Image (cartoon, rainbow, N blue to C red; front, side):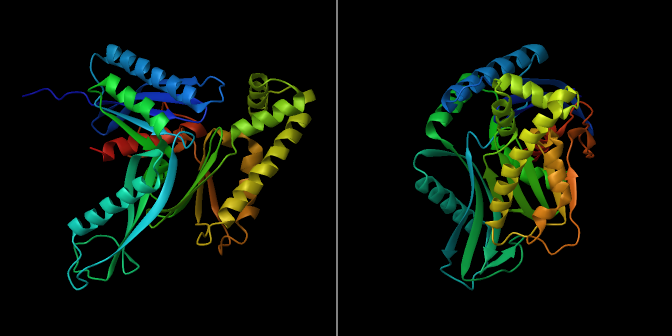
Length: 375
């Protein structure tokens, strides 16, 4: 009898200002986090130099992992923040030549292929890194499968696409070439969170908010399908900049002060001034947040809202969301359940999260879950 080989994988979370890596192994129904690593990006303004830094880091980290475990990881899934790629939901609608014929899977696949080609044509300066068919409609009615005798005049498919500027993708493509046989899969963090978290949480309908370092990403999921996505450039970095300007100190010092404020260990003499600066930032974040939700005319706040990301450590953001005033006019419900997701508090029958913790490590759960769906 052959001894069963180890299934060891790597998940890499590329954020706006940092990159985090975990090495994990599945043993039966248990999932063990073997190792966790993280590093901050250099404070550079040009994105291409940051992409080069990311590539060097990933290459060196994977070679170290291979040396440590004496084998190539079975799978490496790399989630990428919206700073380095653009996510879109587009649709393609096709008139059927024979409306009375049953719609077949092959026909759906052809329409999807055509939709992907259209995305490529309309974005000449970008590379399509990933695409996924979100919803299929026949004559405007959504269908779950094509095993029934479904006929109709039109087929429409909504496609989630992740596009990256060519100069960025050239760097990642170079990384793939250097790493040779290592199985790399690049995905959008926003897509993976919107796709995986509702399943992990056992929720068909949810509003997901990832308050990151430089941006806030919002995904609306209804009936287990991603319906809309949004992103605006405001996150933890902006709050740090506000503190930096308020105290006339450098970014690194301001970031340390912000962390002390979050941990409630800041000297009393500074607390009121920092709180004032943060509240100014919250007002701006609120304005952008409400504006972007209000611009989506088909959006209605679902019963469950899940919030995570490093920017959520600020109590002022949590207080604003808990008050629920932002949902007035966007929901008919008397009450909305707001949950702040911390990695160690999310349970799943496969994932042991004892080594994952905090609002900023939730995306790892999504990447782990998605890596097994790709099998």
